[in-house]
Image (tube, rainbow, N blue to C red; front, side, top):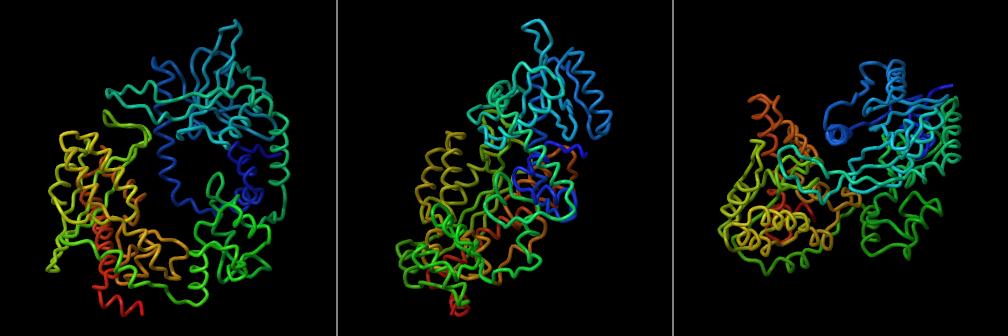
Length: 506
């Protein structure tokens, strides 16, 4: 019998087919995007060890260095001794094994027992984390480990970092002992079902559905949504329908509809019908008069603004909160009535709190009058308001910039759609359709906000060389420049000024 890890048991919980593929066809996994999540988990885990072991008396079991057998043996010895905290302690029973983030000795009632704590980077306890802990508690208690309690410690996003490496108070612990113990029979069934699935010779059949993205995006999504043996992929998949949720999604799934042409008219919103019709006919929709009217009241000069931000799970700058988005870069284009276009970039890769410099340079770049165009204004508005709080001496000017913001996203959503957007109005979906001569795919290295955050962290790390910083700075500047240049072109097309693009659209 295989000893399935907790992660594989939870993969079975999400989808038996996923577990089978994890074991029998791991080469089909797509792990792109997981690097950032692993980095966050490492940072949070490191702080958790410092918070729960301030004297440094604890032992961390080196699973990768030791291998499972020696790691489990060392864990058993440490849990028997109970001389101090144990991190990544392994427990196993026939068919399953798990490693606990934090085990704290408890002798409050005389005999040695353990406080089990699973540390999570989320800001609240999620349902799948309850499953996670229930599996861990079942394995530990079945292995004979005496537990005093079991809980989840998650990030408290109201925590404000006081500086000086003091992270006491960053976690909020939720006791789930009774709940986990009460689910023993349920967990036993998961382990047995996972074991049966793992031993199958044939791949389990499971149609794609909401489970593919819940609680996590399945790394085998590309495989499962591709042509399957004996099936034909939908030419016009219902996944192209925007904001498909609630009763509409349930009705479509219950009817087994995969092709959006088969969805009844009265099941769709006006926007969804537009997406369907454009997809089927292959022609774009553009309300040129409406778009021009939406922009008619805004004069010159016009400014176009985009921020790049970093939100550390574990804050590094005094006065910041977990996951608070701090701008380290912006791009501003300025378009004059005479057609002259200027660009004002800003990028801080010193590793220091960039807030004061961002505030000062942004004021200079945005002037004091004229609309400030953005895409999805909620983000920029929040950044400006929080920046005003962090740099109170610049607050009045920053809030004045916020008051000038004009959002192009709702105009695009109301007035424009191209089949190649596949139901999305993100800037990266709209730009290739609206301005085919501009492409994020042509950029080197940094092509989206997640990659920008990773590039920033790499650039400010102590191991970054001057050559690394220069390369990353060039990539970041090019990416943010394209974001605001895209807004310039979008505004011109919607205002009826870019005749070349209008000809392409027709």
